[in-house]
Image: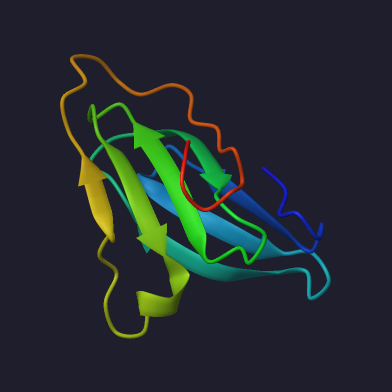
Length: 98
């Protein structure tokens, strides 16, 4: 998914990671091992691009805050309870609901 300003793309991968690509610099600006299985879906939450949601075949949805990544690659929140892998996450881009 593209950020609201079109400068970045967030992507999930089969190596259990989330990647954020800086399109202007043409490089990966963030990579984190996010799940224990394939990352199926990702999206930015708000206009700032700081909050990212991810869903995976490990049955978890996670919330990532890029402001907290310095020295610590842990999610800001983990959403449990799915019985199967999470295949779609979308945001209302209001900083509250997805």
